[in-house]
Length: 396
Image (cartoon, rainbow, N blue to C red; front, side, top):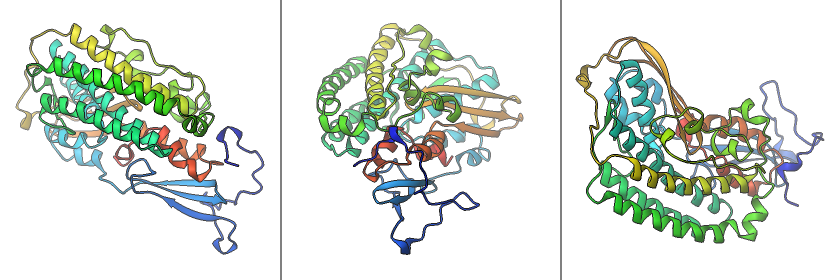
């Protein structure tokens, strides 16, 4: 019978004992326990990381996460580069959502330098963040369905994500890395006809999401493998630093857009997307509804933003910009939860210290290693994807 993480046994007598280092000594010659590696290939794992699993039969007894298979050391690299030279780096800290890195880095610089961003630029930043949220959720939903054996959803989702990337290419010149939000504002206004083409994209997404709800969320197999699985106790939220949809699916209202409004979110009308059952299915449904919320927010942004206006405040020569001494923390709500940059300046042309707060670290390491015990090995991928993590945030 497949294990259910809701029913974690308290009888751990059959579990292998850990040594002084907290690791399990497995006698493979006994054929009782077995070490399995899952990853670092993309299929069946969240990006370029791997899980070292100790299994008893087909049940996971222990898990140790391993990172280091991707580019890393971003924070130290940035300390050795001028501020403007950091922008190509920050985009790669969370590859599917580079815009949140751009915003947090630029916002931290602006606060230290005392720069006020023009209103038009704030509207355009809000737009790009919601577009980024949209395409990130589309990538995720294909991964979640694929982890449980449904490939067609991934095909649909990738097609829809490509449509959003088309709009990004129009606006910024780049599909993945945009470098559109610079200190003081943004690089350009909307191209002619952009709103109409974006509306066509939003309508296509809505039509497909109706089919995705039928094929994935009303699917008996998906429900059987996700309902009741991967339970997150609400009491873990603060203990593990759980944020975003993982927290909201547990009934805990956490969203930086509401808790600490930034950019133009205080002028948009929306309620938090919440859940209560805190399992894989609920987290998936929260993200599905949050995706549709982004569609609505983009339409609100178009309705409220001015047609023209200044898009960038005056700034010093970026190659010789000495940011005033101080420290600050800038944050935003990405698809995985609270995303933030802690920046320290010593008054030189280089940042003294930059620390990235990405939700993937706690979700993919501490939380996953706790939740995965007693899970069937066939459900490991589905559980991991349900936490929605990006390894570069861990290897930063």
